[in-house]
Length: 442
Image (tube, rainbow, N blue to C red):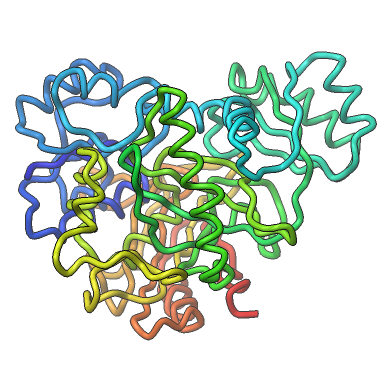
């Protein structure tokens, strides 16, 4: 089967890398891609600026399945357009993706369907009622831009001054995405991420992971798109996984179906494991980055089969195949029994100096291990470019995801392997956290 992957980051590199392992794969295309992705895929002659043209090119190239990585095309209705053209595509419709592109919608949806989340209020960013509320509400508070803000629209406010400043900044920093804000209580607990691959009524969960959003060691500094991740997350026990599936994932699917927005694709549940039980921090409507870079290497099944089943509405038939087993409660991967699986994975993101603020690009990158898995390490490209002379240079804030795979299941061994590889890679201004995975070792 010919497959088209949409996107250019580390998530898309991980998707292409895993899809390339399928015995059913034909040609893999990617748009716009990056130098790492192009080791496995061919460039595609159309991009997401014109979704109708992209669908026409997909038909011309015999694309059997399109896989959407980033959130923006989903919000713009790429799934609706491809389906109308009779093309199979992995992801939610624009209406279903409102779970991500509007935090206000998501919070109201969770309230309607009794899905556990933080208590909240929604305001226009500049209205007096918002300022009045944060001036008297219990601290800390979390201020969130309603729309898509590239993972940076959330401010944890420990003082009233910070909360008022976040309200004032929302519209200017995030434009239309910040014109409406959600102000919610700060939840105490441990964060975790869970991917559920859904077909509208049924789902399969992948290995739970933990992300590291803050830029600096010790969870200090500004929020980023993610500075690293590890999986499986030991904090997601068998009981917690069952509770999340029963109180969050299934009610979300049934609620979306009841509201005429059946959910297909990857439902990313950002969780807070509180003393009262797991609660939703946020929903994303696609694979998360960098969690994808540790979750997919742990998946023991054929990713093409799974994504195709999601798009076709046939996850139940996939689970009914001989040799397929649903993960037992609390198991760390929904995979075929006996499949060769790396049982722990750690990703350290190498970023440009200054990220997530102002940073320079065009810096020469040296010291990458050979393409593919070298000594249990895969380098997923996120923000790189290849010059005409073949040299590799930085082209974004997050540059590389150094992912170590550990068959023994030891997160400590995976951490050590990832950092050995990270220390061998250089570019001017390189910055990365030194405590990725530490929470799993305590």
